[in-house]
Picture 1 (cartoon, rainbow over the protein chains, first blue to last red):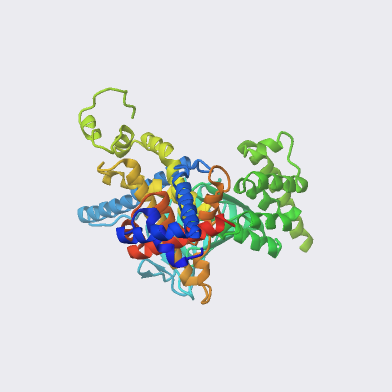
Picture 2 (cartoon, rainbow over the protein chains, first blue to last red):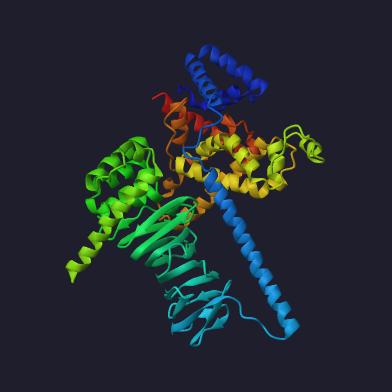
Length: 360
Length: 191
């Protein structure tokens, strides 16, 4: 720009917001200054370009299902909240009518150390957490919570959680912060833990889940599998693997416990930073055979060209089983994807178990 | 709930006669999720384009689009039909994206070490394919503040006073940001 002092006037002229006096003066200048006349023309080209941009751009993925699921989830949560309120009101009514309170559904809890609290009451030795109640441990206390009759949750110091559901088909906690270790022996999807970054759904497993004060989490699976979901974004974390979680982003791509540092850093940038395709390529560059579970999760998370590169690397490490084709995988055929996953997780399970045996 | 075309339904025809209330909107307001899905199909592209241009990031744009439709479902009863549904949804989308941007800035300010304020003005990624490739890419590469003002003013047609209200800045600041954005875009496009 030859005359930067004219920038405001040129813009106002192009917008039609310039005063009549300034307009006359600028037009005199434009007649004598080809550089400013050219600047004005380029500015108008830009504005024309902006006005011609498409009004709509097709979203890369159809989010209708995820939106419907979230709407349904919120409706259920509201009903639950209302239900807790109604249950409380009903409890008061029964107490007033019959002169005695009625114990609601809940789980038993034992004090392990310090002074855990259920609501505002300190837990002396043992007690019961009812649906809707909070269990909290401070820095020096811990507790052991029975998950109905299907397992136990070790509640570590500095943890705050709520019992959300205690039905035979739905054992559910909400972990706001802190650390729990869960051991569950039950059919899949009976026990789940809600966190600010999504829900950990038990698929028959043992795991440790930590949530910090910002809602960021880390899950480490020590037996079986855990599925972590957030609005349709899903990570299946097998034994011997970790996944980071973030509010508004959900679960990150799982990685095995001995994954190389460059791979972990690249995943962090890809999942929660601005890493994009470059970070995905860095993951590919540092991936080993042992990182097959990471590569499998990357397939639906990258676009066309990169997806092919991920496929080729993964196929080299763990060839797809019969009936699983490259076009099918690249088109994200869910049946093929699940078949390949079964092979990959079997191989990973053997690797982890074998490594455990060799260490002994 | 299925409504036969052309069938007179007491009350509905009268309410639907208001400017912005189409049959789909009316049914969605009554809790018909199928009608809301129709509205999603009709408006998703427009909302996504707005979210993409305001955020400069595909992943964030998808998330914001999802937030917009969830918020729209929750607030549909407050839609009075004084304007077109698309305008109402559009305004909601701007508010959702800007609210998240403010929240995100607050989060980053809490965790950023001193001396890294330029990260708060980082550029996003870009839609690289399709019509207007260069301009879309250049818009996505703008600093966040300049990008928001350019998109709202030059692409969406908002006035500086409205932009000032939405962004919590003076109209004069909006104007200065706009001229800066145009300069940066021209520099990038004329390279």
